Length: 76
Image (cartoon, rainbow, N blue to C red; front, side, top):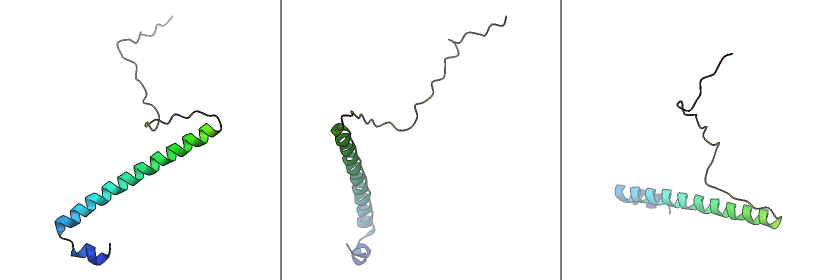
């Protein structure tokens, strides 16, 4: 695709091309992610390590205790 081709597109066609581009970028990123996970698992398996890769990132949320279950402190 050349710049002249892009300039020749109507506004509607240009918007559609933009949607297709974003979809393709997402698809390629997902494919690269899946390939990387497969390579990691294959490498780990070759040295006898089991790897489980989940979809969760970051630290787990802190669980706040329920105020009803807390016992008041006793002072002696």
